[in-house]
Image 1 (cartoon, rainbow, N blue to C red):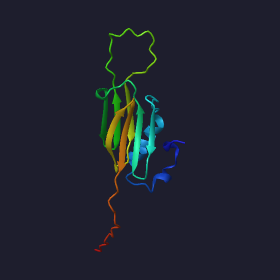
Image 2 (tube, rainbow, N blue to C red):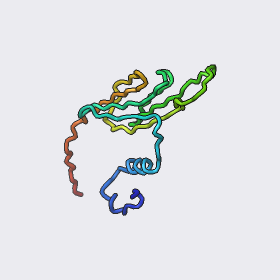
Image 3 (cartoon, one colour):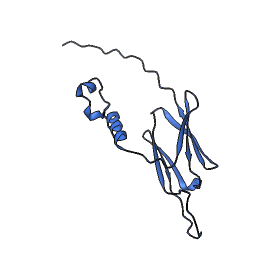
Length: 139
């Protein structure tokens, strides 16, 4: 069932969530590539890790950018055309992965080791939001 097929009545109590519904709709329509393979791991209540299989890519060929609650990971291999490759079985094509992050999530470090890119994430505590009483004025 898509968001467009839901009756408008469902959305009456959701005010200011337009961007969220648009993002859910985009996710519904976009099919992402499975390359490179990755795992998302929750190590405890506040810590997460993303592991990407990037064998053959060096640190200088990978770019990680966090922008507006989206984590972009891009890889572009610098080809060495001097080699006489007889069989090409290792995928070294360019890639771009995108992860939507909670606004409280921050990247703490990225480590490239033995063909795995490990990105550590930490979820900060939200600021305490106290109820606010709204004063009613009369005229």
